[in-house]
Image (cartoon, rainbow over all chains, first blue to last red):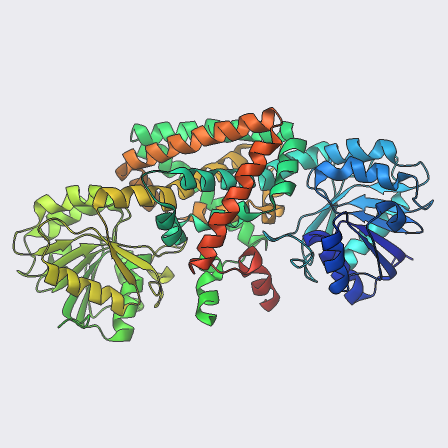
Length: 309
Length: 309
């Protein structure tokens, strides 16, 4: 059984990520039974309408009974509550994983509650959009995206391998990382960009001299590139900020220090300093495109998208 | 002659913007003669290979002789030098315009040199990509984009109307604005986003704890959205920072103040403050999509672009 198949999968949480997993599992036939569980009755009903699973329950404890694979896809701040709910009902030998954007905190919240006879393997698929909820998910979300695992020192390599095979069946590329290092890497590649985006959109919203209508009308000049990130799920991002505090504060301090340097160069008309930075950053963009992490279409190919309208 | 046609157009500067105008003019047959001028011999040669005009000269003064419309498309810091070069050769009654991203500075640099018998009408098409140079231009760049004019108190309304008709022929939507207000609006919708993007990419590049390779590998998690802006032309952006200093410093101060508030909320675990901001910013995104200023395709439609590969 190392082909990514499981007899019974329990999905705890059925938002953008959970529902995308559900769609892939269904489409690829990766499980005989898929139990969907979420606290919200409305969301559970919607999941059933969308036929995302084979069984539905508001009880996370009921959901995990007899499940061979349990995937927790909830805002990271809810991790401990879920761990407590499911701990007593887990099947011996089951794999329990999550999809949280912070790993040290999720481990601290969940590991102490996990019974010795299950395999708890924290994971993080680097995939998503600015949309949220079960309707926002789609099959193929994880294709060619990274999924990072932060196994614990005593993680069974066979179970880890089985979990990786599952994610690879979804099209993911897999990687291992130390939880603390994961949290630092994500703080710079994901958390800081989101916080900065939220902040600049907030600043623009608060201006007295420029109206919101003007900001919206002329947003194609750069501003709109930030608004997509700033439209992400507020609960998810509040929890990330609170649960990766140290790494985020470290990155924010660096960012602010660098910005003060740039601000001073602008104030004093130091064109050479500005030119040096603005040249250096081009190289990073080129590397990202070369690494296949973004399309090279100018303006993100928006013009070609517009042309199709 | 209010159909956007001119007998002879001179294009001073033939980068992304100038060459896109050239392509539109040619495709739409908006002028009998198009003189292309740029200081760089290499660029001039390339413009000729691309057949962007009907005549080519390294001398801006020669280029503007007998031209009915002169469009200056150079980094804003070069505006005064160009104004001095062309002033003595302009045809009486000619319209002289520019495409610069800052307007008060361009007016201060150019207006004093303009003879009384020409119409100097500053303009700014809000269009572009992160690419630069004559090969980066394309027909249709200005379609459905705004072009803002900042006419001077004594601007002839007939000349202004004729210039607007030209830009509308290129597909632009046109607008008038006070130069100082233009500079404030652009500082928030364009200049601050670019500066922030340059800054965060610089911060990431400088980290000791996370490697450039890691930043690039995992950039799809938010970071890459900034790298496109940070790949923009360094000379153009150095000049914008130096020539819209006051408005940019004002916006930077607001941004930094707001970021300090956010940072403090993260440090002290004030989830409600974070949630409030993260919710408010969603509304702006929705308005931008509703105003047709961005596509609603999740992740900018990158998944659909990827699928086509």
